Every structure is written in C-alpha cells, then in structure tokens.
Length: 335
Image (cartoon, rainbow, N blue to C red; front, side, top):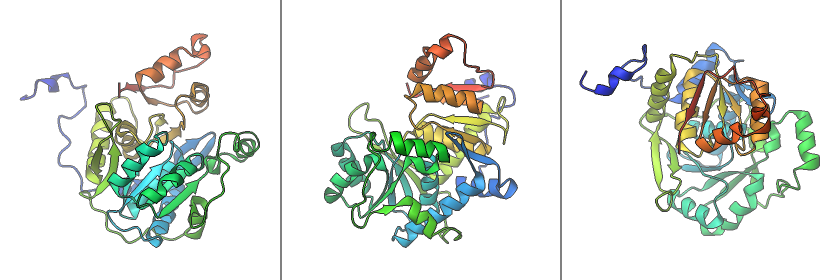
C-alpha cells in the first residue's frame, strides 16, 4: 500500500493491469467480429450497423487510402461530427497505417489552415456541410485529396428521404464536388470486399493526433499511440467493471471524437468492452438526445456539465416523461 488512494478503489477493481497485452484496438475489433459478427456496433437514428459491417467498411476505406498513396505514418484529417463515417474512417486510417487527425468542424478557415499545416496532412475526409470551408483553404496547405461524405448516407431510408426534401439544401449539405475530389461512398463501393491492406500495425505506432481546445492559447497537438489507447480502454473498463457488462452495454456517444474524452475516454472503452454506440451527432440538440434515450435505452452516459444541465432543464425531463432507469453509469468530465 505505497499509494494511499488504492484503499478507495471499489471492490473488484485491481490495483494494476500490467502486463498489458501487445495488441491494438484493431485486434480487439477483429476478435469481436470473429466471436459475434452480427453484434450491434453502431445505432444511428434507428439504423443498426453490426461489428462485421464496420469491419468491412473500414477495410474498404483503408484500401482506398492506400490506393490514393497514403503510407504508414501519414496524417489523415477527419472533419466530421460523430457519425458512422467518423468511426469507419478512423478505423480505416489505422488499417492503412495512417494517423487519424479528427478536428472540430466548427473551427474557422484560419484555425483549420494552421492545424492542417501543423499536421502536414495531404488527405481530408469532410462532411458535405463543411466541404466549401475546406476547399477554400486547400491552396494554402498540403492537401491533395478531399473526400466528401453526406450525413444522410447511413440514415434509415425514410429519414434519408425526409432529409433530402427538407434539410439538405437548407442546411448547406447539397454540394457539387470540384474536379479531382471524391465521394466516400464511391470509394467504399470501389474497394468493397477486399481484405484490409497488408500493413503491419504495432502497438507502439502513433494512432491519433488530437488538438487541445486552446483553453490557454492556440490548440496544441498531442499524439496517442495504439497501445496507449488500448491501455486507456482497459483501465477505464476495469474502473467501470463493477457496473458494466461486456457485450451488453449501450453507450451514448455524445462526446465528439475530436476530443480526447470522446476518442480515448469513450470510444476506446466501448471497443474494448464490445459495446454498442448510440451516436449523437450534435449534443446541443437536446430533443434528439431525449428521443435517443427513449428509443435505445442506453446504459452508459458520458457527458459534460453543460449537457447534463441542459438535459435536466428539458421540459420532458422536468415533467418526468423521460425514463432513465436503463442508466447504470454516468460520467461527467471536461469541465
């Protein structure tokens, strides 16, 4: 008992998890697919995607990146909100040997230009709504490949139709790609059914380049290795093990993957626990959050103080019309 805080650990939480396995989250993903290929990985507006589907889609994207010339260690920027695309592209970047660089889509052109130059990325995946912003700064950066994706691509068919009719043009999602730019959906079709590239990924390789929120100045880049992500997932999973159950939990993915909290503190935990992710693309849309809670009955809710406060102040919550009995664990951070 050299460390006095150990006496405060919950019963069943080990003091150490060493030695850590020499694996990556990609290894955990593949193992999940082998054990239960049809287990739900993502829930997005009522559509369910299995772990085997995410494995196949990320394999296809990895092959597309290799065909575009992405090499091991190259940075690939992801200008995406939480969505099926943000997950399958990050996994695909890893499988191609690249370093994923998720960046807040709401940054200005000036802010994005500085971060693009700092990370040296030549490839960007961007949601249609932010395509013109990325295109405007391309001449001032090293970006050669711009891959656009539409939020409606993974919506259920009826919701996709409604989005096309009432929101696509109004919210700036209807775009025309300029010469040499690419659609993610086309790349996935072209490389469908091909095994993941033969690129060796070791635990010590860099996996993520995340930029700080700039609280004390301009955002700063921080690198996370594949092994660091695995260890983080294992540690948090062990800490939550008194209430969580492998394979059974549904995590509300409200924290953006361009934050370390969302990527290392939530995504890594869920992959390691073989959980299902209920995706919230815009956590400020409290109506959508309430509807998702009603429909998917999540068990794990990671959030931030402002999000919990907004939820508590929602009229339906105030009136007792939202059932939270499915929740086993809430975590508040990043304040």
